[in-house]
Amino acid sequence: MALLGAGIPALVGAALHTDVGQPYQETRLYFGTQRADGRDPVEEREFMRFLDLEITPAFPEGLTLHDGYGQWRGQDGKTVRETSYEVVLLYPEKEADERSTRIERIRQAYEDRYQQDSVGRSDDKISAGF
Image (cartoon, rainbow, N blue to C red; front, top):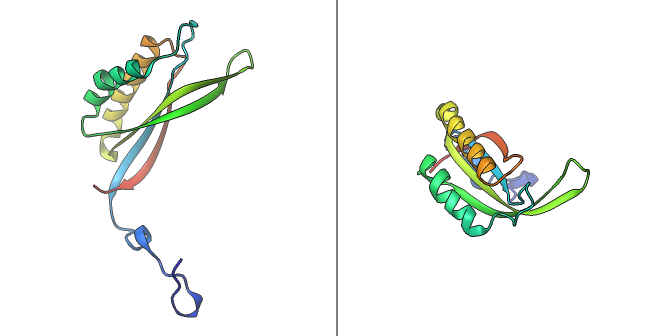
């Protein structure tokens, strides 16, 4: 951290630009790959096809995809470990209601198609500039 005179920290980077950006919503979706019916996990090519056919058309302006490794406790109390995917979506806060409808359709489609108990979702209000 840079210091100004008398040991006062100098603000750097984004801290200097507190007025940058517009109100946005950030939604993260967590897609597991283990199937409830015991079949082989969802393969990467299957997930990429789902991304191309379901998520990209609903968010054509862009998204971020992260490979992941998740774990959760099943109803039997055992830990389930699986390959997972995290999709990060950013959209203007004023469009949150309409975008939420799209997101819920995506979640339901994945759950139905790949026999998933759920697709995790988290939402945060942020400030973003592009």
